[in-house]
Image 1: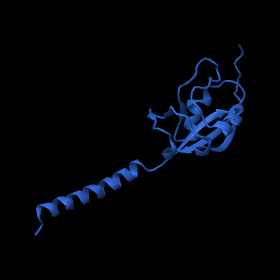
Image 2: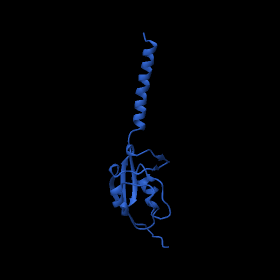
Image 3: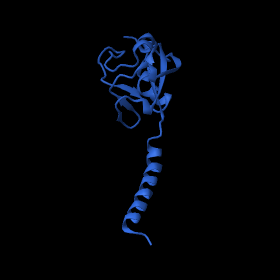
Image 4: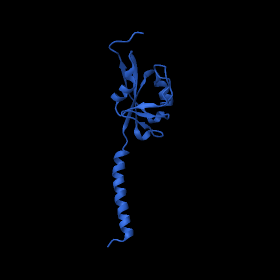
Length: 136
């Protein structure tokens, strides 16, 4: 016969087991990707990724670093807006390496803190050649 205390303990054990399964799926680390212009590689290797750097269009300083779960989506969110020949580096990090959390949008993760160089990996590069360069 179960006592009230042992029944409560049994319920707690079941809840803890369920939470472990649920949280294991939710908190399982995943990869995040970021494209940056190749001319920033030396700075990134030295200091990591830092929010607030002047954008390539030189019109604003984003207070975050933009990542996505796939290289192609990260490209669409950042580098694809370029309309001139350019070279880009692809950087990767694990979601559990994010310094102090992030803001999750539909296809974008905005990280507002500096990401140290030891937490990111340089995984590739791409040369973008637009079909028709815009002339100003």
